[in-house]
Image 1 (cartoon, rainbow, N blue to C red):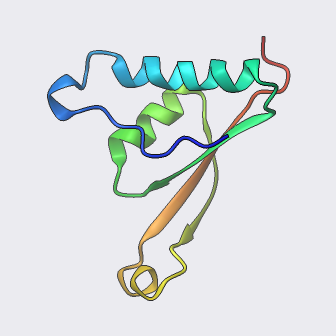
Image 2 (cartoon, rainbow, N blue to C red; image 1 turned 30 degrees about the vertical axis):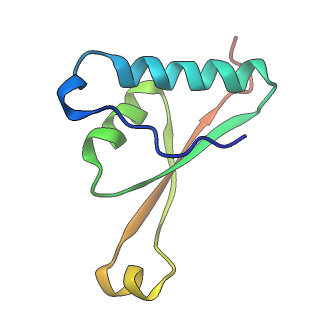
Length: 88
């Protein structure tokens, strides 16, 4: 299962929409028997990273984007993981 580019328009942020969407994704994955939810985000996306951590995601690893631009700009990607095993 893949979800790409979840976002909330700036003028609707702060209303709990992103948190509700994140919880819905976790519930969806849990009901389908997934063991974990893994996501990637740029280090520059501070609000998104804070949301993921509030939802219970843990930093799994980070790496420089493996392209010429990624190496040149030191574009760092962080992978987050939410382990679904053992959760109701």
